[in-house]
Amino acid sequence: MPLRFPPIVSLNLAGLRWGLLGLIAVAALLVSFPSQRAEAAHVNPGFESGNLSGWGLGNTVEGVTVVGPDTIAAGLVQSPLEGSFMARLGNPQPSSSQNQPIGQNELFQNFTINETFVKFAYNLWTYDYTGFDRFSIELRLTGSNAVIYSYSQQAWGATGDKTRKNTGWQIVSIPTSQYIGQQARLTFSAGGSSDTLYAFWAYIDSAESTIPPQVVDFPGITINGFPPSRDPASQTIHLTRPPGTGFFDISVPVLCPDGSTPNSVALIVGTPSPMSVSLTKGSGNDWSGRVNTPSGTAGQSFPLTLVIDCDGQQITIYIGSLTLIDPSGFITDAETDLPIPEATVTLQRLEGSNWETVNPYATNLDGSPQIAPKVNPQKTDSDGHYGWDVIAGTYRVLVQATGYIGQTSPQVTVPPPVLDLNLELQPLTELIQGDVDCNAVVNSVDSLKILREIAGFGAAPCAIAGDVNCDGENKSVDSLFILRYVAGLSVNQPALCTPIGDALPEI
Image (cartoon, rainbow, N blue to C red; front, side, top):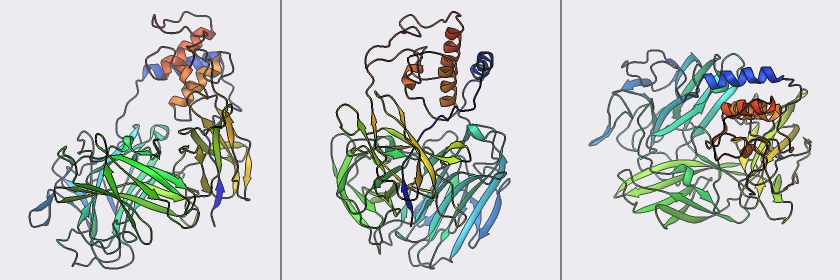
């Protein structure tokens, strides 16, 4: 049975002894090389060679082929997202009456990561429904065998729904800046899982410049009025709820591919007996509804899928998952005792003598996840609640919220389950420009913490004070400005920007 526990975004500065000159050198290097959002260099990403050059095949019970526009049925053609070609895993079928063999069709590539993102697109087609067949993505370091990113999805729809369904082109953009220079393997897999009924196949293509129609505005999804936690690569949402308790309200901005308003939108909660909730058109493009939390056991996860009717064309899009979990803790305001929604909570585990942020995609030897849901950090919901199911170990969490001083929890050991790791955050009344760690002093540690934030190691408690050049975000130039201030050198801040060391306007 999974174990319960909380989250963190810890900065773990113990053992880091950086001198001022060393920090200046690092900051200077970062300033010299502007940020890039290029793709990591896997070759032939869009299969424009017309073949699988650069790619390898694993298990292929039906086959993996490179195709151009692909005829699925009379009058129905799937075109590549961009260019002239795409890869197809499995075989398309014109109706639900054709069978498929059990087993996967695997496509992979080994390559050296040398850019900051691995980016691609997929489009799934199926006649099957929730609980059957499987599509998966995995990006793994071949040296350490560590999983950088993993994602899997089954077919979708209510039991007995054998209509032809597809996800449309979905973009995945995996951050890889911290793995540059390392060897990796990217693997796609699609196929039948448990029986030979109803075809299931997938298309893979590059996503270098083309943006497909955004039927669902993922960043605009809210749960009980607040943005939920989401996967940084696919942007799909992740919800946590105590088993069988109450309900939640969801609002999703939806448009048809041509920009028109859908005829109807329904949310399918994939349980053993999938639950369908009809959403109601609200203001703008929003569709909303109330969803009862499914019953089940803690650690159990259910897919969330939208079915959108656009003048008779049925579009089905996977938007995320809901994981049942016993509450691990609540984040509240220390002065009012009210919950703090949208607080960022990151989970960290003690590995030897070091605290390490838990990789949400890490698995045990038997393939089971080490944490559920597979998202870290996590945002608190409208009740200020956060939580995970975890394997045995020693954990702590770091909590950050806009307008509050960040806080790190005490360490706790699981098992037994930890269900009351509650933290009260103190509201901020005054910030000092450049004091990103909220200790009322601007020094070289603040500069280092900005660099750690840029490198993806988490933001400091008062990170909003790090934008000392007032351009709207924390960058390496802000780190350098703070170092110049600490060294007593001149700092060329914009005229209307609060000087480093002075109090920022009250928040």
